[in-house]
Length: 359
Image (cartoon, rainbow, N blue to C red; front, top):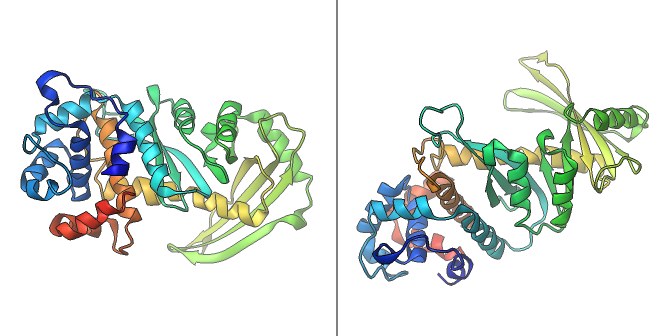
């Protein structure tokens, strides 16, 4: 509990009076252990605490017995999410060590977290994913579904020296680029028609460049298709954009069932002059945020199926799920995430070993 306590002790308990008889840090720890064992909501957390009380008292006191469903619900509904997310970022940085490589930013909807009668407008979170470490390192609400503001607020909590931050064209803005540079990182931002002047200048520079500098990857067969990529990077010292060093183009050629599909052409702004080969790696790595984070949250931790909607609970429970996912990923066992979750519920020794890796 030492590292956990040191990072989360600054989170203020929102309860008062007799409602505070269960220690906040103990509640958060029990909630995390419950999610590691497959708990999906506050009812599951309370059932886990009752079933595993003797086990849990090896780590925490729980002087007043197992917390109830109402206790867990009250805490997560009232807890201020911003300091909780900041503590999560600090905790992750503590056991992740020095990060390197691609850090991807992308938004994700919590499909079950919508206001009554507004199913088509669920809550949106911005997630920050360290691809090489395979860890979630940040989360922030997209206020009013404004992912740009959410991303900038998430970046403000992080130090990312030596990393390359990637994001889609929504984030290709001067203020977001500066927010990335302020973390100590470089950026590789997708560039589309939402920035017509920048796009036109990038296209002109690339059209005038020597095509001999293009790097070609593939073609290779994977996922029932044959795919090849080509990248070209051109220095761009005279474009007025924070930290801009180069513009780039990546072309993707794909065939399915032997039939060629239209070539996909993507443009990027870069704050460092990457080699074309490295750019291909960076562009492809960005998408691990979809299949190694968002997909796993929905399939293994059932995030989209969560029906929590009230107050701050959806946002705070999303942090607990990410804490659990990071803990599962850090454990050296090579089993799948779903298998680790099942084993943690069956085997208390394995659960203790999972919790022991939160250091």
